[in-house]
Length: 157
Image (cartoon, rainbow, N blue to C red; front, side, top):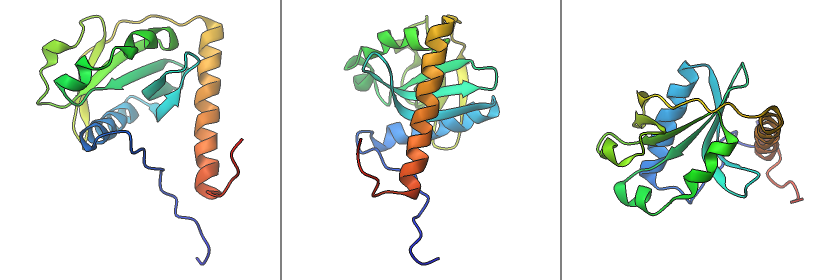
């Protein structure tokens, strides 16, 4: 159709190809557990969750993607993510040693085609007000991205 806008997700140039593959596999895995997910979701703390996932019961998971040992060692911001989710997971590629990840977080091993939960994450139930705030962020972020797909020349706020 002439003048139509392609419905492709915007590319986030901050992520390595390896991290993008891991995120794709994790998102496919999350769908099998009936979770919907978004990438790079801004949180109230000013941080951005690599993946924020929500299921039909309103359970909230954050998945922090680490594509290498160096990537894990260079970044400690994930410590702040627990206050924004019921469960916190790391996700990595099969070739990254699983032993580097803290035992008090879940672990997902993924490639570009899928993933598997290697270690379950402990549950830290969110207070109701925080859950509402994160759910609203998720919904608004998803809506804004859909709007941008249909109207890429939309003025900034």
